[in-house]
Image (tube, rainbow, N blue to C red):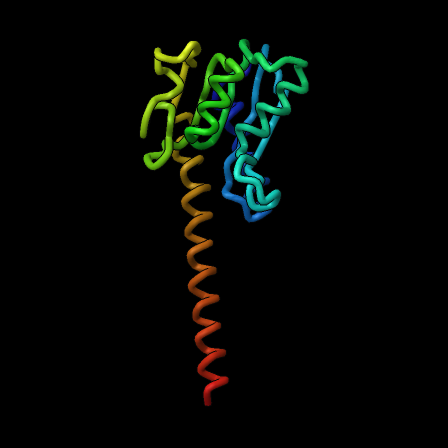
Length: 168
């Protein structure tokens, strides 16, 4: 049987696919009976769709693969703690367990900002394991946003130089 680190490494590979598309590098996959049945990576910019999160794409693919909306024996691996929208989809699809890498203090709904996945007021709760390859999962996000800020600064500088040149 493969362990959480093995599957989180696969989720990181999905995150790298998102990064190559200039998407926020988040990757996810769903495992049932030690088999990867679906994968997903962020495609919000590519599809111009606010719901094209890695988790939702993996859930949709898993439902098609299993022929059921109930993923009761599934484990979802995701590089960043699920947001409220994804946590809702996880609960609605009855995912048994969620394993995530990096904590999300601004929107994490698996215990950091709030804990929707284990809230007993819902009719379903998930087992949650956090921090698996957390440093690696956090680094890919941090480096992506640093590069994005650097590109924006460079573009701003180039525009200012061009404007100055035109005004001579």
